[in-house]
Image 1 (cartoon, rainbow, N blue to C red):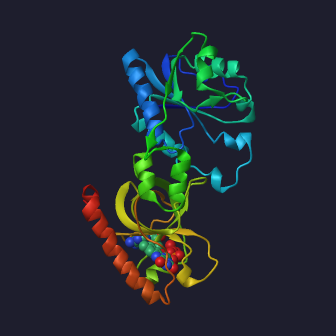
Image 2: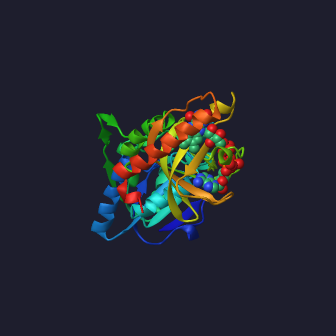
Image 3: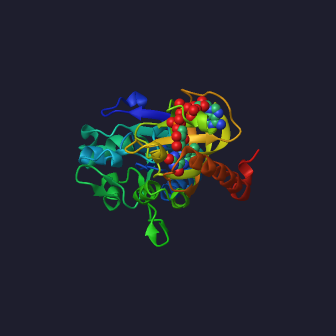
Length: 318
Ligand SMILES: Cc1cc2nc3c(=O)[nH]c(=O)nc-3n(C[C@H](O)[C@H](O)[C@H](O)COP(=O)(O)O)c2cc1C
Ligand SMILES: Nc1ncnc2c1ncn2[C@@H]1O[C@H](COP(=O)(O)OP(=O)(O)O)[C@@H](O)[C@H]1O
């Protein structure tokens, strides 16, 4: 897959000359609804023997249109994850456009000319709620702006349990730790990228050393709780149990940390990039009277983690 980053106004040299089916959207999470849009575009690309292109943005449009608080400016998929997901969906060409005021304020005619026609789109595909231009023109308006220069395909709303599959719904599920619901809406288990940093060096003293994770900036961290996870370090996947919490047994008013005890592991890996896959929420965070109480619970958690993977994810056990 070719990835082309664009900052408005772009240079024509950046644009690939081949005709494409162009899929438009922000696609945070690349969830089942997004997969349906991209899948429809892929079908059209195959039929017409064209390359499949996607045009997305580096940041959420609402960042430019109005102020966002810090928490809502986080993403289900940061750019590196989105790139991986798009490649897996068979996308040939990904344009990542910096969403700036200059880009957002392009009149719809100019947006259509510069970002659809000049990208050599023979077909533009988007979800029913895609909007463009400062007045937020919609998909129903796109054919009139196309003026016969490309075809327009609008993909309808995908529902699950009679409700729209949406990034907002998935963010809400992630926030309350409902990663099962998140996975069923995403169509894959939730992932998070980060780096191993130093913690308080207490884990090793209680027999459960943990990698402390600093998440990739702007990524959305699941709600407080204890989870069965998979973690990739130095290109190898391991099983583990993760705690997202304030380590309340050891004091009040602590910051939320992400810590993972990795099964069958004993290496020092500070500074390594990691990928975490969230499989199951085991329990909430508990305040124990002593470290001994926590240790007993961690032993039970380890059994619960192994049981979970044996029972439901046998394919991950090697
Ligand atoms: C699977 C798991 C479950 C945990 N559950 C709790 C908990 O319920 N309550 C709590 O106070 N700390 C919990 N912890 C966090 C420990 O307090 C923490 O790992 C320990 O203090 C080591 O911290 P350090 O890595 O900063 O040295 C848990 C940690 C793990 C790995
Ligand atoms: N089974 C394991 N799971 C997680 N980390 C481990 C494991 N074995 C060794 N380590 C290493 O030990 C470190 C964690 O030790 P810990 O005492 O919790 O210290 P700190 O909280 O300062 O990182 C990890 O960062 C990792 O490099």
